[in-house]
Length: 182
Length: 296
Image (cartoon, rainbow over all chains, first blue to last red; front, side, top):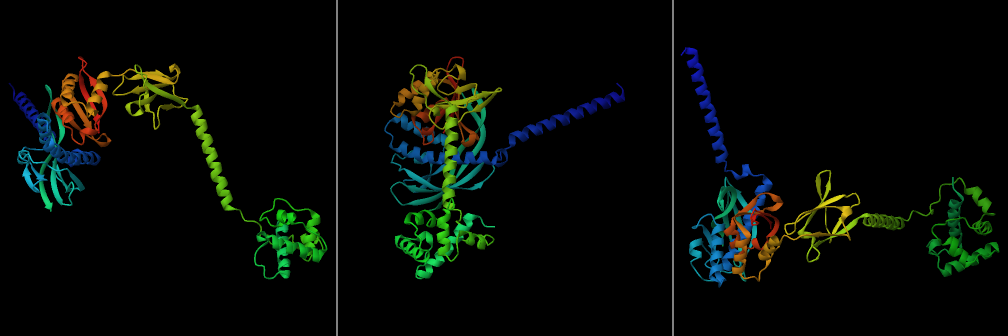
């Protein structure tokens, strides 16, 4: 084989390597995009943030329903729905009964009734790469006690199973709560 | 140059000035003359000119702020004489080149405003009457039960040059303009229908129900139904790989539910899932629901 042939062969291998590297880099860039503010338009992000607040209201509503439900199966369904709203099983939530932060698993292991609450003064205080922080005031039904808390709401692109099919979809999950003011 | 009517308005001023020579305490204008002032004026005119003017004439010609026509010449002569002129010709001669009279009635703005508003309302009324007259009103009914289908359950489009143009339906029924040749109706609860307007009989369109979608709606909305029944029916209706999406406001993004999760949120509803409304239902080859689009 002549020298020219070697050079052409080596040059081709070099170009293929560069191309493959570029494709791999491009592929990983698409997968690594997690910054929700960059991926979603302002209007779309606002829609997700509104939905996130709905989920917080759903959480407190279903906690109250779970605590008073007599039917074991429905009570279990509420419990699973509450878990479905949260990022993890050990997510910290404001416990309306004790007025303290507790892991959701602890809250759901206490059978005492959870009062209905009214949530007010909702506002987004911060948006980061894959979550935002919502500040809101909790007013227990029938009392004047108010507690202002902050809670993380995550928006993640992850796999979801629909029967035998798996799809990547954007999913909202509620994260930890912290007490701002009692 | 003043017109004769302008000059008559000027004569009214002169009459008033002359009247005030007899009754200096009177501070109003001729248009404010009451019975007493009219009587006084008639007396004064009679005294000065030896002529007589009727109460009715004063009411008809002197009291009005605006006059449409010039009074009779003999009456003008009497009043010109009362005001210090030989007759009406002398009065006209002396004042025809004077400045326009200050008491020429101003445009009554209120009158014109009311007239303007009334005219506008009349025109608008006429417009809507004609529009309604030319608009075809249609009712959509269930093909089997013959019940009227509410507007919130259907979407209606005008088909024009292969374009679908949504028809607004703020009131009961469908109102279509005369230019509409063909319409398309779709609904999650009824089979879609495309129809030529000319073929519509008795102003009503029949839609065949999608029984499964109506059943699904009932399961989602019926708070009285036992959860076991709901679960059983949903298990039968939904395909194993059903994809349920709940669209967010302005169709910006969506939430996704798989079969078991969806059923759970029907059995143990959240505040949000209680507001769910079906928007689109698709079926697979086995006639099971494979896709649900929901709005909240």
